[in-house]
Each structure stands twice: as structure tokens, then as C-alpha cells.
Image (tube, rainbow, N blue to C red):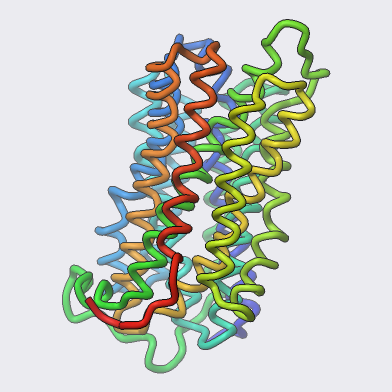
Length: 402
């Protein structure tokens, strides 16, 4: 039985938000975990980014399954895996290595939620409705990211950090009943791939697909880097002599920053449909790189100046995500979609792992988290993601192919 497009998008967007309560749970409490487990900046980067490496590791296999089996079955199995991993983190994580392993498993589970959900939408919509659905799904992702910070930060403050992961596990499992509202794909979209491994070569023959995959990798490098390091950056500023945070919960502030990016991402995606995605993504990426650099240079300024800059960077870094998602969905076809979405998520989340980790390594190598110079270099590294996205969108494609 087929469902109305709006019902499908709403159900999968809500499921994405619920399953994302685990996404930023570690970044929300990373300062507390660093104190508890005596973590270095590099270890903080590993722990903050390993979830995204799990996503990248699991995606090729899960993408292959989604191309051969009913995507709803793959989605449901991924929900269970991710939910159990969050419960296990709350009960069993006792240091860097155990936490690292459990977050890796949780990331593998999330890969089958995020990208398979996008495929479920793409197989049920067409044309501009498909592109707009990609933008709303991207907005739901931003809402989930912000909600993860808010829920984890508040629960950790009230009941301790394990409560954040218990809530994440429960939220993830609540995504299961929403599959009942997804229904069957459109006629012609229910075809099963003739091979277990998607034809990546066929997908990569499209110049548009390659460009949007590269842009997404740059986008996630910067977005995940600032998400993971938002709270530590504020903690650094508040620790400076004469500075005060006025009792703010930094995780809540990070969550509000992520939520503020939602309407911007939707507006930018709509502008991309009207005026050209390449031009719009390029403009937003250049603006985000400039804001990122300014944040690093001014990180020792007053607390509220830094907070405003971090808020703005949280918005600009994610602002073009909806346009990039819509571009990839429009560039792919029913035959190439599984491969294109797998590569899209693989490259994006691999960059999402490397971004936060590289920032941590740079901070350690440049004098540690108490060094202003180290933080300047950290934000320069973050901003490289938007530079890559802008380069990927630097000109209108003239030739389709290799």
C-alpha cells in the first residue's frame, strides 16, 4: 500500500530526529568525559568522531542490502542495532577504549537509518517534490542534531551522563513504529539491483553526482568538527582570566545553534532550486569559511562575542546541506541511486570522522587546549571543509561523464 508523499516524508523525518538523540550525545558531554577519563584533545577527537567512522564503515554493506532487499527491513534492523549500542554505552562504557568500540557500533547502526531513510524517500517521490523532500529531510537531520545536544546536555546535568545514552537508546527504538507510515515505493522504483554491490562506477560517471559528493564531504568535515568542538571551545573561552559563562549550559547552547540552522537550510535549498544549487552552495560555503576563520581569531574575546560567532558558524556551516542533499537526489536515477547515496554517505561521514579528529590532533600538536594559537589553527582546519565545497561548486558543469 502506497502512502501520501507528505506522510512518508513526515514519518521518516520524525524517525530520523528520534534516532539522532545518540548522534551528539558524546559531544554534549565530552568535557565531562574528558575530566572523568583524563582524555587528551586527540582522544576527544577520536571519541567525538568515531560514530561517523562507524557510519562510513557500515554504509557500503548496508547500502548493498538496501539495493537488494526491502529497504524497510534494512532500516528496522539498523534501528535495533543503534538502539542497543546506546543502551550498552550507558551501562558498560568505562573508559576511552570501551566507549570508542560502542560508539563505533552505534554509528554502524545509524548508517542504515540515515541514508536508507533518504533512499526510502527518493523511491517514493519524483521531480521537485523529491528535491524539496531532500531539503526537509536535511532539516530534520539538523533538528535531530540540535535535539541530541539539548536532551543529552539537560539529562547529564540532572542525572549524570549515562542518562543521556539511555534516552538515546529509547528514542532510536521509537523510530520502528513510524515505518508503518512509509508504504510501498512508486511503480518502477521497486526494482532490485542485479548484484549485491552497487555499481559505483555507473554512479560516478555523472559529473553532477561527483560534484555533490565532494561538496557533501567538505560540508560534513566542517559541520561535525564544529559540533564536536563547540562545547570545548566555549569551555576554553570561559576558563580565561576575567571571563565568565554566566552559568550557561554549553550543550544546550550547542543544540540551539544546530536548531537555528534548520530554517536557513530550508531557505537555502529553495534558493538553490530557483537560482542554481552550484551558485548558492558556493556562496554559503565561502561565507562559512570566513565566519570560521573569524571565530578562531576572536576566540579569546568576550564570552558573548564568541558565543555569537559560534552560533553564526553553526548556521553557516550547515546552511547549504539541504541544497547539497537535493542536488545529489536530483542527479541520481533509480538505477544509480543506491550506489550514489552509498558513496554520498560514505565520503561525507568519513570526512565527518576525520574533521573532528584532525582538529583534536592539531590542538594537541600546537600546544594543547589551553593555547589560543592551537584554537586558531583548529578553526582554520575546520574551515577547509567549506573551501572544498566551494571548489566543488566552482563552475557550472559543461560535460556529463568522466
